[in-house]
Image (cartoon, rainbow, N blue to C red):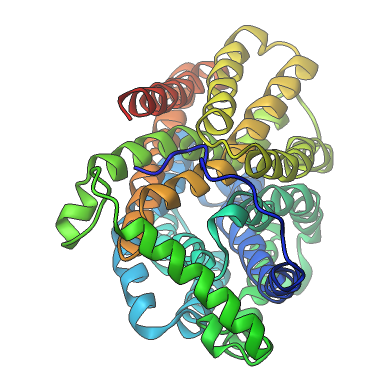
Amino acid sequence: MHSTTLDKPVQAVSDLERQTMRKVAWRLLPILMIGYFIAFIDRVNVGFAALQMNHAIGLNAAAFGLGGGLFYLTYVLVEIPSNLAMQKVGARLWIARIMISWGLVSGATAFITGPSSFYTMRILLGAAEAGFFPGVIFYLTQWFPVAYRARIIAVFMVAVPLSSFIGSPLSAALLQLDGLFGLQGWQLMFIIEAVPAVLLGLMTPWLLSNRPQDAKWLGAEEKAWLTRRLDTESAAGGKASDGQPRGRLRDILLNRYVLAAALVYAGASGASQCLSLWQPQIIKAFGLSTLQTGMLNSIPFGIAAILMLWWGKHSDRTRERVWHSGVPLAAVALSLTLVAFTHSSLALTVALLVLAVTGTYIFKGPFWALASEWMPGAAAAAGLAQVNAVGNLAGFVGSAMLGAIKEATGSFALALLPIALISALGCLVLWRIERKR
């Protein structure tokens, strides 16, 4: 396994390297960030829709939790085939296909009429979006050398907290359009927020290039430098013989580093997905209005968006991955546990939610950089998809458990404890695998 501290000495950055990487970042990241921003709004806007939708179509907490979690079931099942298909079809066309698919399904969710149709649309949405995130992570490894990955992945993933920071008050405002065109507010919200995904999907084939060699917007010298740098790193990774995943698909998916990374990611992913879906209801339970809930719900995500950029850059600068992944995960477990003892105070609950949400997001840049170092070369596409897929099972399990516990006990604080346990387990697995390494 590669050292998580990247033992090579820091080398001076040439003008050619600086120019090339700046051009690549400005060309690719805005498109991918906007895509992920839209994806997450369309994935979690059901959390705000629930403030009206649950009563309108007869969903209780347990049914909403199950439906919210079903997204991750098909997301997991389709993710690895989707990532492998992207390798054959090419990133431009496959990412475009994913965007158009999830946009159409998300918009169609406006017309559900009860629990069964709610479950069906969540299942379809999971299948439609599957492969986008690990596909982009794999795509970024084809463009950015190892030394840039934690900060680049953090920049890309800042779209997630930004989607909730901006999307929370936006979704709350759209709910106020109740009655427009004869539709309820939650229906209009689904339709309006689905349109950008379809439009961006139609534009993507003309905006992205599959590989540096295909990029007409890079000069010949820039292409040569970047291709040589990436090929050198790939060759160095391919020579390792310390148990890293390689070879047959089955061997890659069952490799101990792939499975360990998946368990670690489950600790952050489970908490992140559950909070995205349930946090509006947790906050509104304090007696706030829908607009107040939207504004307050955005605060943790705004703070997380700022800190995850700094944390990813710090991980690259110090050339360290494990502590930069483990400390945030420990903070998630601790904060969600403490919510059980502060549930009567809005201020303390929001403060702990800020810590939990921030932990789940600042974890992501260093962790995905670490995971891509564990899975070099041909193993990366399948391995990263496996990590994301298994990790996201925690979103299904956690959301279903949260809904069932809330329905049985009436307490959101108690319902968060299993999520805290999953985060603690992920933290322990990370330290264990690092000690064995």
